[in-house]
Image 1: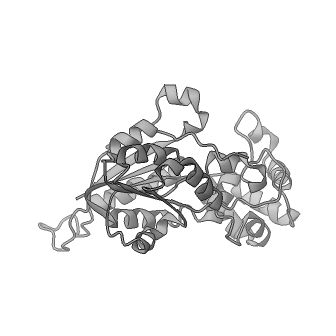
Image 2 (image 1 turned 180 degrees about the vertical axis):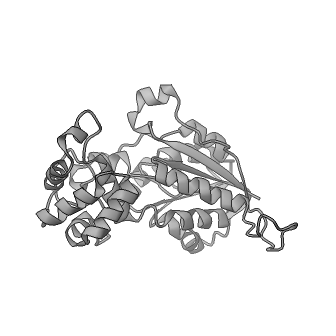
Length: 308
């Protein structure tokens, strides 16, 4: 299917990122290229945009979409946590801005064979990087009950995590998303399922996060992104659930105030000085107009910081 993408919080992101003609930028989550296209319109022809994505299909589709700006655009199949190494390949030591639009893309959700959706019955997968060997199939069928409980509770904030994990282990092997959904439905009492969101939503989110290491790598990725910014350069991050947003908020705070001296110390002796200033006191959220036109933007939050 065609790789389509509606960029979330587009205008707000551009206002905070402040791309300049001739500048060098990184879109660490290239996706369908929607954000990248608008950045390229501003920085082309003298500017440079490195677009990174874990999904080879995204790199290919974005290259086609952004062909008109090929002189300024370089797609890279990789993980944004490796931003330092990726930039070093192109002899780039510092950039004017970095954008991270976290979470699963519309294309990945809408491609049934990728196994992200609980509305389809396909082989368990959920890999953002299709060259990665470990998938949801291995996780569901090989992880211990205790590990599954932890993942579903920590990453899905699912109150029935322990019971769901026990039912998964009891009914293994599970081959498809449809089989997994049925097991989850059996695990959650009917009264608890009535009137709420799809019973598999939280568990599927948790498994996807675990398969792709979305949260375990995020703090280091944010710190790496700040490290490659020029003074005055900006990092913009769009999150889609509370766990991501909490990591971004706390990491920004620790970069703004890295001092580890005891609160009662009269003066700072650790020598750690602020690395960034936080641009967004509160996260920026979509307007009602955007929500009316793109329901998938409903949980999006945008935070930004500037390198000192």
